Structures are given as C-alpha cells and as structure tokens.
Length: 348
Image (cartoon, rainbow, N blue to C red; front, side):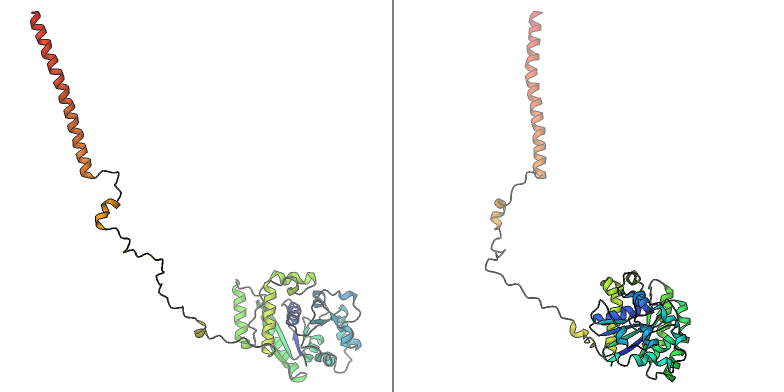
C-alpha cells in the first residue's frame, strides 16, 4: 500500500504547490512510483508539470463529482516514475455539487483505494482553504505535511489548521498524523526568518523537517517553463533542497537506509613515521672533499681589493715618489742658477 501525503495549509502563498510538485518529482527521481493529485481549482500544480488544464476532459473533478475511475484521469509526465491526476477550474463548484452526496468527505478516500497499490507515494496538493476539498484530502491521507513560510503571518493560521487536523483525526481519519512541518522561503540574512524558524522548532519539536527550503529564483522560474525545478535546473539550490527533503522522508519510512555512523577517532589516520634517509652509493662524503689547510692559500682566489696595510703602503710610496721628483727638480735648477751668476761676474 502506498503512502498518501496531503500538503495542506489554509494560508495561501506559503509554498504548498511548489512543495507538492517538487517533492513528487524528487521522489520519482529516486525511482519511487509516485502519483501527484491536484485538488486546487487554480490548477497550478497541473500547469507546473507542463499540462494545459483547459484542454483536459478528465480531471480530478470528474473523479469526485461524476465518479469516473481515477485511472482514466491519470496522465504521464516527463519523469518515468511520476504520474498525475490534473485539476480544472470546474472544481470550484464541486463543493456545491457534492452537498447532497452521502459521506461526501470520503469521496476521494474511496476513489484512491485501488490506486494506492500501484504507487509508493501519493502526494495531494490541497487548495488554500479548509473546505470540503481539503477535508477530502485529509480524510484520504495517511499524513499531512504543513509548509510554513518564514514570516509572521504564516504563524497565525497554524492554530486553526491544527484544530482542523485534530477534528479530522477524531471523527474521520484516526490514522492521520503530521508528516512534518516544512520551513519554506527561508532567508538566513533576515532576523525574522531565524525567529520564525526558532519558534516553529520550539513548538513542534522533532516534527519539523531538518531540511529547509531556502529562497531560490529557480523555484520561481520553473513553473513558467512547465517543469519541476530538477528538470529546469538540476544544479540549483532549490533542487538540492527538495532532493534532501525526499531523502529525509525515504529514510523516515525505512525505504532508504540511514548513512553509516562514522567513528571520528578511527577515521583519523596517524601520519606515517619518518623514515631515515640512507646514503646512496653515489653520495659524496663532505669530509673527503675538504680542502687541506696547506692548500687553502692556493685554493682561495686572490682578492682584487688590496688589504688595509697594502693601501697604506701604497699611499706612503706615492708620497715618497712625489718628494723624490721634487728634489730632483730642485737639483736640476740649482746648477743653472750658479752658471748664470758666473756669466754675469765675467761681464763685469
């Protein structure tokens, strides 16, 4: 028997349809036969999978009002393991047309009895209200997933929804359970998002999914292309978030095994011990190539710069040479002066 999950919240714009479409697609990507049922008269989940509701003749409206077999309204999608029962705008008048039907709140439950054997999961996208359509989905479901936008107004309607779930569980579906509370449109940069997430976790405890759906532009763009986000951009953050959500659900249900626990102590590998280097055959011993003291003077190249004592000697030598040249010049001038005096005295 397949598990039926209703995605419900009477407040609009919290990510119900986005969650229903992408969760169903992620479960199908995990090769789990999945059926998506669109019970919202707006038919956003239908168009989000590339199906034009205006061209359909067999939808969930015909199943619930006219009593046709659900298999006749089931359609294939781009994903091999995902099928869908689409919606139509005519579903708006279903509550009035079913007003005289006996046990009208169990119409969908009876219709899905035969379909549950074919699929592992059945995901129902509920309208943003607590009317007869949502009541049918809750009665037919095994559990309900509650998307909560990380803003203040999203918290106000939770009390009324929980009261409705309690009434359904008491009078119509005793096996109904809360699958989990899913935080959507989370922005870690905003203090309000963190406050709402903290408040939801404080109230619901372990019923809150560990996976959080962060704000991602690809999630907003994918419906306009008629694709779930994993077919529109497989590498986006939105794809990762919903694949993580599907994995978390599969592990809760025991379909996917839990990852093995890692022993941190044994996982730390000690570094290898240092191995001393062995001298090779061609290694040269520095002691054998040392220059003997007697050869240091020969081996050491002469410096072109004179030592300080040599520079002083050179300076003294230059001074003596200059003094000697002056003396020789004086000696050569003196005989010439004596010769001139002798010539003058002879003339006198």
